[in-house]
Image (cartoon, rainbow, N blue to C red):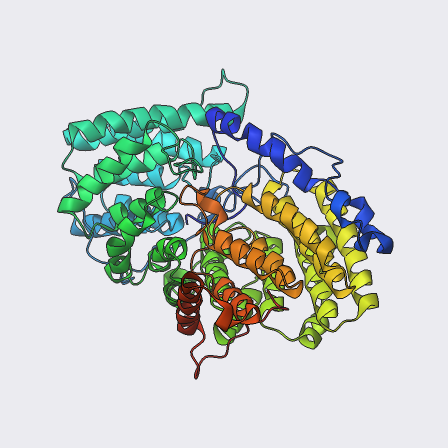
Length: 635
């Protein structure tokens, strides 16, 4: 995590860079009113998807870890953790240490614990460890620095709660009043202080935060040059630079998105040469490289990260950001399965810890965000393998990860759960799935996803009436979602894809697969325009469904071409984020297309491609063993 999902791109430059893309997306998000009519689900499919009612250009999407749906402000960490007792100390976080100026060994131990949790993106635990360290040594400069650091923004939380900003600013001001401070420690405090300036003269809060981020990045750039051999400072420098435009480190062709990125990459890679097991360097190296053309260079470091801190679930999960990009979905699933179990062990420890443990209120980012991100990622990885057992495990875990009364990201993740069902459940089981309880407004995205799953289930049963009724409800829920949560851009894009896939499958059922092909060709372009996310906001390539319809029409060569495009094999300069490397459904589709074309009719090159697809498919679906759900009607 980074985590996330539906993230907003911060910074004025990023908004300008995305303007043309958002203009392209406007048509994808518009209401397709004609699809509500039964007669529109036939040969007319070619023109209805061009309809656009409202442009979403310029709208920011809600960042996964920041706020509730429809909200623009984060929960204050200092408020969530206000009543937390002192933390335990046996978390299996490895050996990362940074010697600080203190005479108290417990202060040093708690400081190191705070640093390790900061590197693991568990900012609540980082915060309370630093507080415990400061309690034991009130003159500890770095303890105050750590408290301030843990209350700041990060690549998964872009806005700064005012309460946290004020506390952090006061901590740093107090740290500067401590006499005889170590020069390097004082320099770190001075570098961090601009991150919490009020900037009251600037009316817009997002612009205020942009200024804070730029000033802090500038200060850390200078500090990194001053201390080139300090791996912690190099990590913090990369962190500061990446917060300038979170998740926009590379353009869609793999070039650095802004001038600070190459030196930040150099700093991290330079640090890793001497400190290959520094969990912070490895964590940020994954994030800064995962969206590049060379995610594979991180693999040797990613492989080792879980063993550096097995008690930090987020770090156990992080290698999957690389494995997913390189197409190793079995390893991606396993990393997230282990991360989920690691976090569940952590929750058992802290929930029953000293002082009665800690509570997990609505807005607790680690419990309701990062933990469920592991499960979501496990599910997305399992889907691409077609493994029934793994999909079932992750889907069930995700469904039961919800907390009573918790709305933080719950609509989003319930939606993911429903979206996964067509890939491994029978139509009858899907139809028996109840819709979300409660107010429809609170469950718009989940309702859309439930409608979508219902359409596909009725299509597979060849129940035209049931499919039509479910589609009409899907269309109504999409309209309501757009009207009520206009800023959730990526959610609207995913909803449009659900409409398109459902529409195309109904066309196919009605004997007009060609109409469905036209719908899906446009939908594939709409998916291509979606921003980078991990896992992708829509978890499968639309092109695999398109290929299934092409195979149904006997257009095998076209299907093969489309499937290679979905794998990213068609063009070495292809947009980085429009391919799903290692997708088992694509390999299955290739084998089906070639076999229906006639093995005896294949050219040597086609036979080689067929054999390669069968080999990759066997990794996911061996002849004996794991149950696989791969089939054309599920694609």
